[in-house]
Length: 144
Length: 303
Image 1 (cartoon, each protein chain N blue to C red):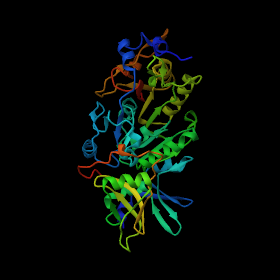
Image 2 (cartoon, chains in turn brown, cyan; image 1 turned 135 degrees about the horizontal axis):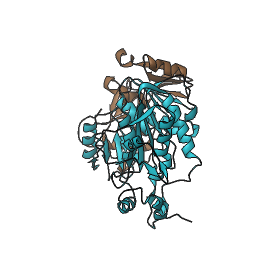
Image 3 (cartoon, each protein chain N blue to C red; image 1 turned 90 degrees about the vertical axis):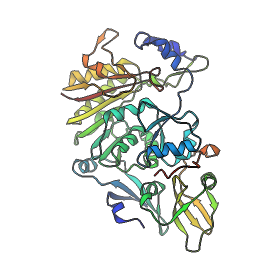
Image 4 (cartoon, rainbow over the protein chains, first blue to last red; image 1 turned 120 degrees about the vertical axis):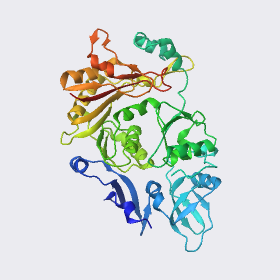
């Protein structure tokens, strides 16, 4: 659950099954948004998938400081395997299922779907070929 | 038939200072440079995390957000890139947004926005507040722009698709960036056999288009607003001559840029043409002064 204050700064727009978050504006900024013919607005934040709301990886990265539950922490090798193969086996309790925030010790990776001891990546990779060169940090502090 | 880089650039032999050093500097690849996305991370902690994973980072004159990362051969394949913590951006192209200096809460127009490097940089300066209008007339370039805005977690931006020169005059902006379409000569490099690499065929009448876009941008500027005009080319007809045309047509002035980054001043004459003295306040960025691509930029305000 994300506290309401974390969402107060956003206007929400809907197009089809996607909800977009746009930073709330004031004064002249709101005139700009209303006056122009807009192609795309803000950040795709939530998609309706079946009967569920799926948060996008982008949304989870910006809201990560407020997200306390449904977080899955992976090791370096697990993160690489998830991103390169698309899914990994991940032991989870019966009540631990659904969309989760996936992170390593230092990076928030994005959204995953946890189901029946399998974690599926929902993180867009845009064709990047992640390998050993993906260079997941091994030491250090959380950077977010 | 391949064009030799020395043949292509010899027209600028008297324009580019220390021309032989310039030719030396365009041999081979430019070192990889990256920008840290401060919307998602603290730059000092990210530097620490990257170094701890074996990535070599060298500081740059552009401050703590920009780094040379020579060991990061394919930054697009790095997990830091995938998650939006870094953006691959050459140093020269990072300067216009720094010069423009958008602040939180302001209303900003990025007139030629794709692929979004400068837009996302400005969003970080503005801490995702206010509003950026990222205008990109070419629909074919929207997917890349959208993908970068999403990856870097930008929430204060809307995308429009007007031709720059026809952008509606209904609204005014506090800051405007015109990174104009140009011949891209600044990206030109010298291949192993001396051949010219990195530039594409030059469209016709770029000067006319650039002047029309800059005039419209100026007309969209608020009374106390700031505008930056930039290109990645050396050609004075696309640079000083364009700014000079603005100075003749509108109550504009070119103001000095107060930053400690290696540069040369704009020029006053070119092939028999004379430009306003103020044009010398513009900056020329050369690859032998800053390890990056060639660039031009002018900071403009109302008189």
